[in-house]
Image 1 (cartoon, protein in one colour):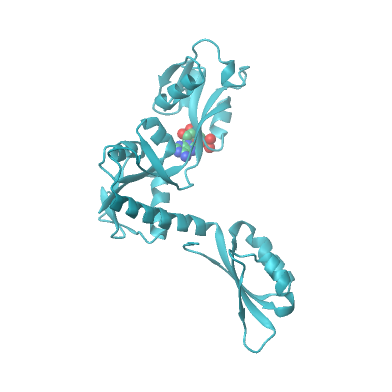
Image 2 (spheres, helix red, strand yellow):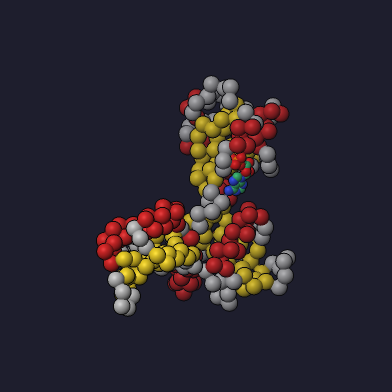
Length: 289
Ligand code: AMP
């Protein structure tokens, strides 16, 4: 059975568990603290720290893994992403003191000190930009380094940007964009997964993608007066045009369509304004075109 390394705690772990459950790969473990679990009888999950997942996959202890792309990049291991899971989105940014005149990496002078929890990715970034820096590795809260006089610059994860702001820091460059990714050993590597394993991983990508796709959609059903059908088709474009079903003995048709969840408020209001009745909106569990 294929082994997949998954984060053992935190928000990322919760989101991953929910995604697998929604894909019909229920996480069946023998207890809260179990180190392994069955994923719907199809895969075996190994729960480890998110930081260690790139190493587990690169060393072959797991056939695939899910972790933040920031951690994959920092590991420096040759790994490839099979899928972007879209949650855990953040960016690794270079930030300077608000009052400094620095507007971009090009403005850096001399060999400034840079505090970060991502020393490798930071070193690589400044090398690529032809800048010499002294990397100061920290294990957390890099944003306080300028206040302590440890460094003038930080390279830190940013989501909303409020942590930098309250610490009087300003972003001047992005080192990388990150989110949770399904990773495996690079296909060109001698350690790459054999064809049968790759096939199982392709099936997994298809299943997880179908869940993510479905989350952004809703299924709408409505009874539509025949005279309004053309106008309703404009409101409910659907994936391949709406499904239109005759309702026996009336001048009404039932229309079904998959629509964007984002616009659902306006969609329902427009249907109602066109004289539709019996409007039903439901969530979709999986969507595979
Ligand atoms: P924010 O104030 O929203 O920009 O969040 C910044 C802080 O939250 C940083 O110091 C990070 O350590 C942490 N953070 C934000 N997003 C993530 C993420 N996707 N993964 C890990 N840590 C994150």
